[in-house]
Every structure is written in C-alpha cells, then in structure tokens.
Amino acid sequence: MQQDARGLALSTDLPEAARAYDAAIASYLGYRTDAARHVEAALAADPGFAMAHLLRGYLAMLAFNRAFVPAAQAALAEARKAEAGLTARERHHVEALAAWTEGRLWRMLHAWEAILADHPTDVLALRLAHFNYFWLGEADAMRRSVLHAKPGWAADLPGWGTVLSCEAFAREECGEYREAEAAGRAAVAIDPRDLWGTHAVAHVLEMEGRQQDGIAWLDGLQGHWEGAAAIVHHLWWHRALYHWELGEFDAVLALYDGRFRNPDSPLTRAMPDLYIDIQNATAMLWRLERAGVAVGERWAELADKAEARAGDTLSAFTQPHWMLALAATGRGAAAGRLVAELAAAGEGDTTLACIHAAVTGPTAAAVLAHRQGDWARVVDLLWPIRNELWRLGGSHAQRDIFRQMLADAAARAGDRNRLRAVLAEETAGRTLPLTRRRGYAPLAIAA
Image (cartoon, rainbow, N blue to C red):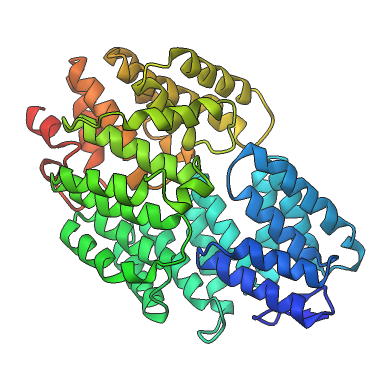
C-alpha cells in the first residue's frame, strides 16, 4: 500500500499511480488545467485505483453541470469495485461522491468532516468541503471546518498553503478581514501561484473599498497565472470590479473582452458555459448598464448559453445569472422555462430543493421583473428574502447585485421606508460609506 504526499494510506501498490495521484491533487489545489491528465495517468498505471476514480468523479461534479453527472456516477461505480479493500478514509470518500451525485449535499459534507476528524491532512476532503460550504452560503461552517483541521497540520507538509488560503477566504466571508488578509498573504508568500490565497486577499480589498490596493495586488501577481484554470477569469473580474467602483468603465470593458469573457480564449472554448464565468460576465454587464454604460451585443452569447442550460439547477447561485442574460435579451419563453424548472426543482428532495423553492426561484423572478420595470414586484419578491440571499451561495461581493437590485427597485417604486432599511443594512460589514460605493451612492444621497 502506497502513501500520498501527506503520509495517508492509498489503496494502490504501484508507486507510479501514487505519484500521478499526488500530481493530480496538486493540480486541483493549484487551479491548474492538467488535473484530469494526471488522474488518467494514475489510472493507466493502476486501473483499479479507487481514489483516482473518485477524484475523476469529484472533478466532474465540480463543474456544476448536469451533463457531467453520468461521468461522476461511472467513476463512482469503478471505485466501488474495489471498496472491500479500501481504508475507512477512502470508504468515506466513496460515501461523499455517492451523496454528491444524488444531490445529498449535507450527507456528502458529513462524510468529508468524518475524514477530517481522523485525518485532518486529507487536503482533498478539506478543499472539497470548503468549496461546497461556500456554494451553500455556509460561511461559518467553512471557517469551522478549516480551523478544526489546521492544528493537525505542519508547515512543511505539501498543501499547507492551501490550508492558509482556505482559512483566509473563510475568515473574509465571516468579516474577519485582518486575519483573512494575513492568512492570504502568508499563503501567497509560500507560493505566489496560490490563486485561492490571491483571491481571498482580493475579496478583503473589495470589502474594505481599497480599490487601488486591489489593482496593485493583482498586478503584482498576474505573472504567476500562466497555465491556470478559469479562476483567472474570476481574478480579472475582481480587477474589473475595482475599476467599476472607480468609474473607469473603459477599463472594465477592456477586461471583459480581453480577459474574463473572451469567447475565443482557450479556457472559454474548453468550457464556454462554466458557472463561474457566466456569473462573472452577467453580473458585470448588469453593473455596467446600471451605471449607464452601453454594453452592445455582449448579452447575446450569454443568453444562448442560458437557453441551452435551462433546467440544469445544480448551482443555485448561477440560476439568477442565467436569468440576467435571458431577461436582458427579451427571451421570454426561455425565462419562463427557467422559472418553471426552478419551481419543479423546488418540489424535489435534494439539498437544493428547499433553497430553490424559497430563494432561487424568487430571486430569478425578481431579476426578470427588474428588467421589465415592474419595480413593486421586485420589492415584493426580494424584500422577504433579502437576508436569506446567502443561501444561494457565492460571496458577499457576488451577491451584492441582488441587494443593489432591491434598493434600486424600492427607490423607483417610491418605497422610501424599504429603501432606507436596505441602505441601513448595507452599512454593516463594510468599512466604506455608502456614498462611496457606486452601487448605492445615488440611492443613499437621494434617501
């Protein structure tokens, strides 16, 4: 039996399979594009290597694309062929992937937490739990998970930087900005290619309104992004968000077209409808239009992707972003299908079902109503759930457009009481006054 880079037992007898598996884990943690290639190398060396099959399944599920679920299920079936010979830790991974493919997300998370209780250096369980807590909006759980595991680590273990970067982002989402920035900068000091640590610090700088610091931070690190996966698009989106706040709209459009939504780039061609890319693009176009910037025909290709993915409800946060594109292009029939699919998903028995029913569906309907100028309906839909939007997943910075949408609609509907209430709530968790935040300044002045 071989061991991984952190000394955990692997159910393979072949050193070359273990080495390829370690390379795949390092690639996944580093947001590189070659993780799948290393998984295939591990399986070529040992076709019965269960953890390699499980990692293949995990990578499929990470796309939040219903079309990839059968591949994950096939990988799970292959792993189960060797289940009798697996360690207890590996069997928990089998349980986790099975639960994920079934939409039982809390069962999945409990399996990873069971691993971390006994094996805190299982960095795969740590990182997958972190990722999924985030997309469920569970910031406190995300922080607890990494802080419980952290004492079991040593600074010389491969993956220690990932622990710090996960701590950084979790603390940022919990409003612990000083601790978050310190952990993120420490991760990047270990490895300037640590894109999650880079990302965590970028979030701190956004939340604190330190746009020039954010631009300088990303400028100083972009030389380390070669060979990275689509997280680089999100980092460029953060760069554009700083420029948007500064009113530098030409720079935002240049970054949109050249850096984070270029349909001809290799990353975009490889996966043109990746959830995070769609979130980046639609949210930025909406912000630009709200600032009075003409965005031309940029909505159209996003709406094409949205029409093709109607009914794929694996990512709650992506659904209102699909609607942004459909509503902007007047695709009423497709928008209606999206609303209907969310209603159907809300009647299911998966973890996301109640989220779709209570939050995702109303948010998507509010997006459509806002584009149609039905301000009172936007307020009716978003006001009751404004403090439940976290359940969509995503970050404070990402979810902010829906609170902007509510505030804007309340102002246009003449509902000054709710406008004032939303603005008062927005003062919490941010150090910058509303009069210096582009999404709220005109409303704050008028209120």
